Amino acid sequence: MKKTLAWAVTVVTAATCTLGTALPSAAADAPTSAAVTSALTPGAAFDTSRLSPEAKALVDQIVAKLPADWQQRRDAAAAKYGIHDTQWAGIRDSVLNPADYQCQNTALRDYQATLLQGGNFELLFFLYFLGVFDMPTYDALYFGSESKDNTFGVNGEYTNELTAEGKDLKKFWDIYSDDIQIVPMHGGEVFSSPERLAPIVSLMYGIPEENHDAALALAKLFIYVINLEPVLQGGDNPFFTLNAFAFSEKGDPNPAGISDRIVMGDGILEAMKAVGLGDTAPRAILAHEFGHHVQYEDNLIGADVGTPEGSRRVELMADAFGTYYLTHSRGEALNAKRVLGSAKSFYTVGDCSFTSPGHHGTPNQRFAASSWAASVADNAADQGHILPSRTFDELFEAKLPDIVKPDATN
Image (cartoon, rainbow, N blue to C red; front, side, top):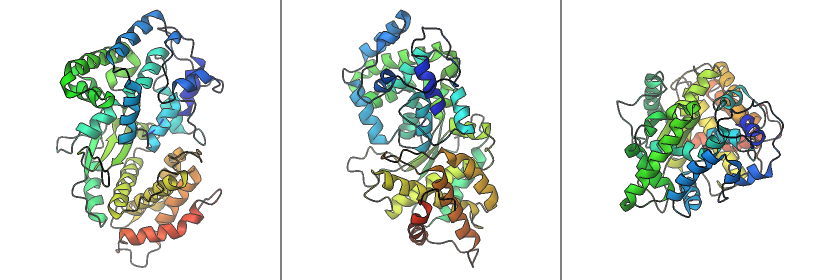
């Protein structure tokens, strides 16, 4: 789950704004503020001296109601559930966090940088610092479920497409997948009432069930702040739901009882449409996330997943699994050129954080993995045969050194 570079610049240049001042253009100087970077470091204190008196009073009300160690609790919850581990969350975070960076600017990052423009800096920065933008993610992850009444997309426009693809993916891959739920993530409804939000507040900040009144009071304050800032649209701003991810507790020694699932956020679907990829990218994203479930079931993750190389391998493999399904005659049967054109556009979200444990692979490497997978499907002697997932992985592992070589293009 991840965020965009363009607004990280805005955070730094707007550091002295007062309440009511609009955000400046994203086309600003490079970030240089150590104060902003340190404020975003897990466990750091939020510098209220940068707030106007009115904003500070509001911040003080919220902080006073949080547990004394709320930052540690927030970080522990995010780590347990992998809240910031996905590629999409990484892009979103880099909008706000100058410590994050990607390889290059893209239409997707440019789009995401516009989502909070015109808003009040102090309030937005404080909400980010508290983790409020993650609340819809927790809601979908912990409290969401698959249902015939679910809709995908702001206006439900992806419901039929993604529901059908979810069923097809389960038939295509040779893993046990009956228990995988495909769950939508919506924004505004999470903030529709304090009663709806309070359980999420409890989960994020470790507030015991017997202290429900405390969680409820915080929920009321969060809803007040969100509705105070028009750019947030009461939680419907796509920034809240710019994510898609797979989740499984398989192998977790302390499971929370959450079913296997894939969460598809309205915001990421809206982003794909905004940059002209609404036709193919939503299906590619779902196929990629299902690829992670293939990895979970086949025990393909590997013990080195916490290293840059291990994480990169897992993500590139999911890219390959997804593209193989999309281009196979018994999968989506999409034209390889069409799929790869889309992939080349949205896989430029690849990162260049070569030393980060969450490294997903560079844009070229991600495109190379997809190109290779499409060739496996297209060049098969028996076009009707689906390779067993473990066999496909063996082929991928053999090809991986070529995929990750410097400036890989095929």
